[in-house]
Structure formats: C-alpha cells, structure tokens
Length: 107
Image (cartoon, rainbow, N blue to C red):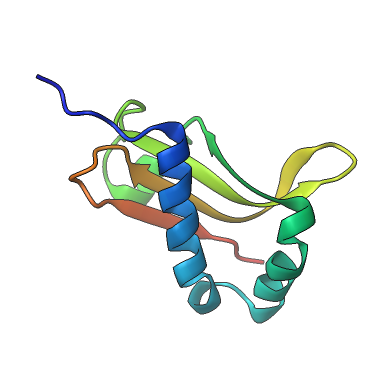
C-alpha cells in the first residue's frame, strides 16, 4: 500500500510558507523589500521538474515522485517567465517526511 503524496498545490503552499518564515534571515534586505513590494503584481511560486544538481547539495538523488522543486520569485512582465528567483526549495511530497532543502539567491 503506497502512502498518499502531497499534491502540487500542497507542495507549493508548504514551500511558500517556509520561504516566508526564513526569507528575512537568508536574503539581502533589498531582495526582501523587492519581493514584498512586487509580489502582488509579479510574484510567483511554481513547481518545476527537479534540477539535476540536487544530489551535490543533499547527498542523494531525489526521486521525482517523492520530492518536488519549487521556485519562488518574480515574473518578468515582458516574457511572462520567472526570471528573478529568490529561492529554490526541494520539498518531500510524503506527508510524514518533513524534508526541505533551500538554495537561496546569492548575488
């Protein structure tokens, strides 16, 4: 019997809550201000295919069905693409496994 996994929307919600809780301690003050001021108009949190670089950051290959990568940032109004990424989060999709690894924006 397989355990129910978090939906895409649930993974995004968890990632966004964690991001909001930790952003002030991990981003430059200017980036926090920019995100806060522009989130209503240009902000986005979206689940994307897991990046191939996660094993070097976490020490194992995250299975796509068990982990979800979420990007949080601002959308370019001209291209309608997320181009200013403040954080990449890898979240476990298993409800009982509280795993999250964050790669913060570094200028």
